[in-house]
Amino acid sequence: MYNVNLLTTVSDCTAAIEKKTGEKNDLLIKKVVLEHDLSKGEQRANSIATELQEIEATLPIKEAAYAQAAEGKPKRDIQTEINTLENRRNKLMDRSESSGGLAFINDQMEVEEINFKVAQIDSFVAQATTRRTELESVAPAA
Image (cartoon, rainbow, N blue to C red; front, side):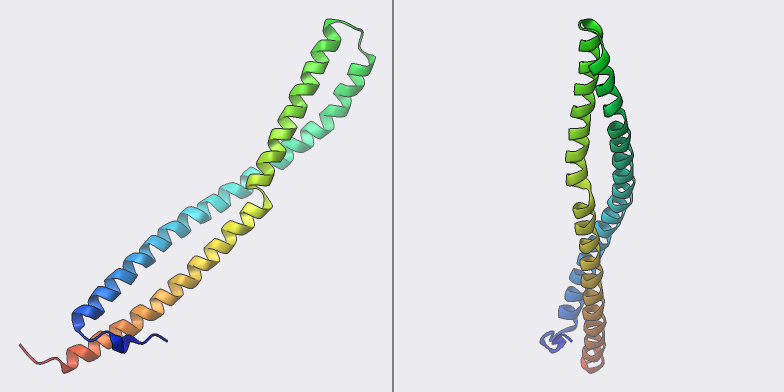
């Protein structure tokens, strides 16, 4: 419950309603962006997990081939492939940490915070609208 009695004129009420409605619209835009990011983030996390599994399955095969390869260019080529796979795995693990579960949860929490703020704004706007109606009914006729 807000002390809308501090709004003493119709114009005060209108200004407060317009300001809070603008804030609400900004929050709703931010929410849409976050929800889009959440959707993409889930897809990205699944893609990263799949690629990591593929690398983890391929590395032992390459390492076994390396152990059996003859010295020279074939062995160096396999070592290059192993290094590439390990580098890719490390990059994917870093991406997984930065855009994985914790980031996903933080975005979900932010969406819920926005929902809470929007509900508070709606409550305030309803009370300020009621106050404006009260003030209009007692305002002297022009």
